[in-house]
Length: 170
Image (tube, rainbow, N blue to C red; front, side):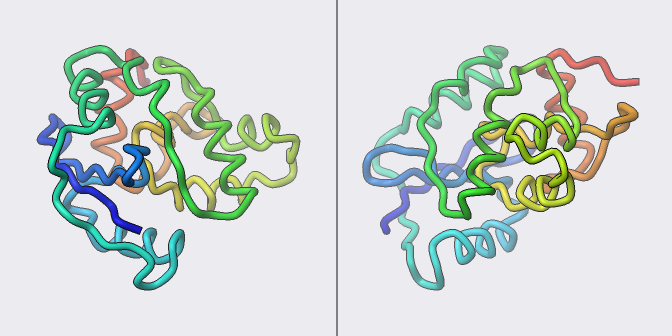
């Protein structure tokens, strides 16, 4: 699979955007987490199952992310995405996309939303394997107590993203 790369400077660091030949978003990751991105690509598409080349035109994903960082936090809502992963992981990621900007949920809420209330830990693992940061908004999961929990991009980025979306944190 050919993946087309664009780099977006943002307030939370440079972001790598990878889209496929149809313009569908496959990966969105922080540039300084390149090793994580490589690991997730191998998990989702197999070793050597992809090739990354520079994009020759601006993707819808790049335009939407630019609008998101300019203040239109809903600009990313309709972006088409595609991932590998298991059926369970994809169900978790679909449930995450239903969490609107300005809201947060706990792992248990996502587990309940996919009719797997006992799968809280598995939801956490699926969340950690999400290859499409921000658009599949894993940053919107916080602890049941309201505390920030881990985030692949780091807690400071998570705090910034939530504040950008209007979430008041205690």
